[in-house]
Length: 280
Image (cartoon, rainbow, N blue to C red; front, side, top):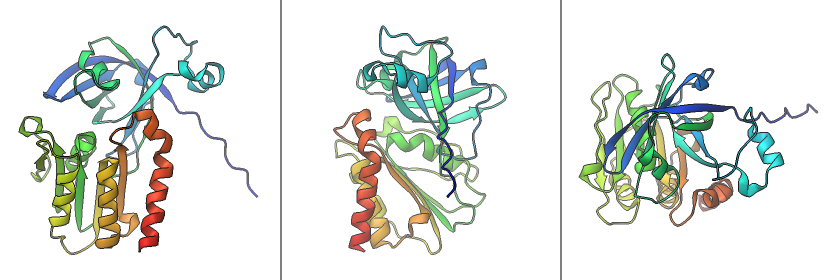
């Protein structure tokens, strides 16, 4: 029996804030760059992500930075907190990466950091990861998500095959949070305004009401775990969409911190799959 290859330590990069842009009242774009991103590369996915590392106050790490050494030698409460964010765009020539942050005041860790980021601020990242890109062989595409999935949905729209048939739904707080997304064929987003309703309610209704085109579907459904679970059931059981045609997962879960959700996310997803396979 062949030995399992050793797990590779994630690559760490050190970057600096180049500039920021207030896209909407609740979304800030931070562009990071610098020589520390030399060697960073993407693999062609439209949902590429990196983990942003935030050092606890008063903690200093030995150089060169080594996340595996830190986890082995430092107590857990001194490990850097990490938050996963989609790479909105990457310019390999200028070595600049754009990351879009949802900001709601002082809520959370990464959002407030982005709101107060200034040119020159340092930021370490791990990555990249990713696994979805629009399938050029699909007959049509379905993109569904809340604000957390908007950067990946926008990137997917900008990289759709020429002439692709696309239905894209994004739920946001209100009209002021809509963004202009330039796509090759002028494919637009159907913006759904939450207007005080529970997160994802409008998305579930929109997909349920959609008259599905004929042919093979390629779907991307991401965002708050509760509505993602509802749509996973709808697509797999009611619409009979094969699992391999779906990229579907909860980016976050209402009422749970990022750490708490990441701790149970894989088990939660596996349980949902088992439940739906049993129901089928």
